[in-house]
Image 1 (tube, helix red, strand yellow):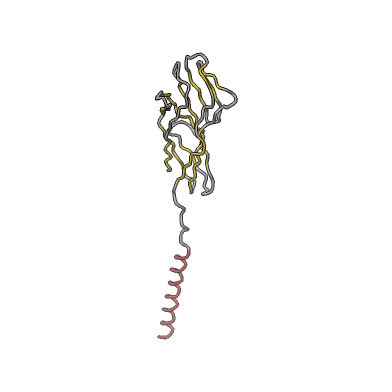
Image 2 (cartoon, rainbow, N blue to C red):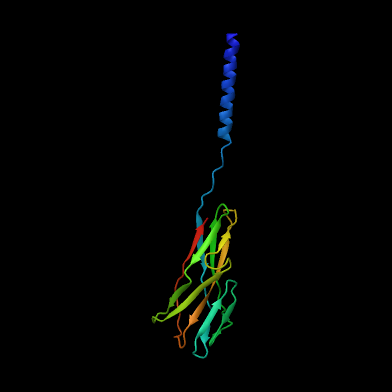
Length: 170
């Protein structure tokens, strides 16, 4: 009888060890990092244009690359410009919120300034939320347009500047 009870104890211990072994083997897989990578791949470019009357106006590029002008501004069709492009890569398919300052200043080498209204983007206005693919190798493209304000009698020059967009993952 003592031999049977000791065998029962060994069988129970073996069964318990098997249960613990199975629990360890069925652990959750390692979750990929939540690192977001954003790479600017194309600058916002208004193309070639001039102020035909000296009265100023605006020139706009929407997120699709369509260019429009107002006032005396005339866009040359030989170089129509393009929207800014950002490549976004984020594992685990999360939502991203974009925020940006509504305006930026562009400066010429002579010190003159032009005002740039940033946006809209293809995902919406400032504060827009959009989803990213659930694939670590997939790149989501964000296209950004803008409107450039040209004052009357602005000097013909190359104006440069930057604008910032914040990408916050949720």
